[in-house]
Structures are given as structure tokens and as C-alpha cells.
Amino acid sequence: MLTKDISYSVEGKTFTGYLADDDTRGSARPGVLVCHQGGGLTEHAKERARMLAELGYVAFALDMYGEAVTGMEHAMGLLRGLMQNPALMRARAHAAFDLLKGQSNVDPKRLAAVGYCFGGAVVLEIARSRSDVSAVAAFHPGMTELPDRDDRKITCKVMVCAGAGDPLIPPDAREKFIRLMNECGADWQFLTYGGAGHSFTDKSIDALNMKGFAYHLPTDKRSWAAMRDLFDEAMGRL
Image (cartoon, rainbow, N blue to C red; front, top):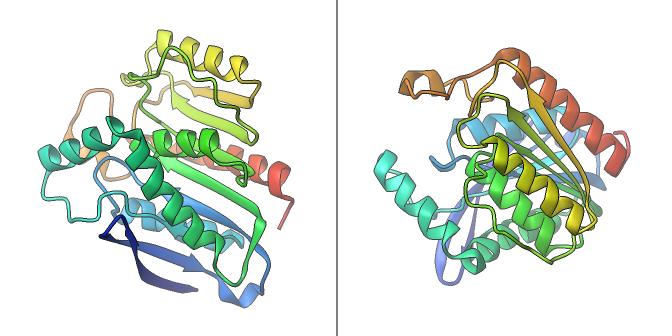
């Protein structure tokens, strides 16, 4: 497998993402953008990119911050800054998406995105702002700041995978998300998993000892299988 860092610029700032590609499989393969959690581009997102590459996708884990995260407070400041500036968040996400789309062995008609926590919000924004994405899958995305209305149409397939005990997705947020998806005519799924909370895909989260945040192996496996089915449906089997 080929893995490498790739630097790119957005509005004068340099970002460094991570490409994973089983380059023995030839050209014209689907590409998947991987959007990291609030802590930045860590091993978690890189591991997911490699897992996608093992399946045959060309995967690119983006960098939304363009700087090394020094701690939780620093990360939350960077995250809040982007959530409060949707245009900048879109610009950074689109630049990474275009970089993936431009890889010589990527089929530009078969593109998807996956996101985790903060990255889940990023891919849902990609779904609303691009017509060249086939599907997005958001794993344990925070939903405490959903807008009351969003009239932008969604043309891709949307899937959210959430733990029933996720403190960042309260029941009223689930209902608001469903209403927003229905209002824009989206092809959506919201999968809720019992026994799981926030960050259920991240094996390192337990060390932080945060209430409602925990790795959950059964949900990690089940949600990954659901993502594979979604991508098979949206982009064809590999």
C-alpha cells in the first residue's frame, strides 16, 4: 500500500493531508475523503484511510486546521472558529476534495466522504454544497448546532451513524436533522446503535475519561459494514 503526506494551500495557508492507496489495483477507482475529529488529523483518521484503501478505494484524510494541535483547548478553539465560519470550512473541505478528485487513478464520477465527530459536520456540509459527491457517511457527528432551516438541495446519499447514548446528539437534534433532510428531499439514513455513545469508532477515546464518550467495538464494526453497503449502492461494488 502507498501512503504519503500531501501538502496543499487554501487562502494562503498550508495544510498537509494523508493519502492511502493500494496502487496495485489500477486506475479509475472510487475516491473517499476522510474528515477527522475535533482533535485534528490524528492516527484515527489515517487508520480509516488505510482501511478504505485496503477495500480498494483511494482515500485522502484531509487537514482542516493547517497547524499542529497542542491540546484540547486549542483544538476546541480551532473547531469553533470553523463552525462559526461556514464559508471557510467549505473552502478547506472543498480544496481537499478537489485534490482527491484530481488524483490520476481516481474516477471523478465516483466520489464519497466519511467524517467523524467534527468531520461528520464537515461531510454533511459537503453534501449540501457539492453535486459531484455520490455519498457521505457521518459517524457520531455533533448535532447541537443544527440550523432551523437550510434550503440547499442534497443530491447524494446521506448516512448518519450515531450511538443512542451520544450526549452530542440529543433526541430533539435527531428530529431536527430528519426534518431538515426531508425538507430538502434527501436520500438519507439515520442509524442509531444501542449501547454506544460518542466517538464509538475511536480506540483512544477511553483514555480521556469523558462521560458519554467511549469506544464500542460492535457499533464500530456494524457502522463500518453499513458504510460499505452505502458505497456499494452509490458507487458500485469494487
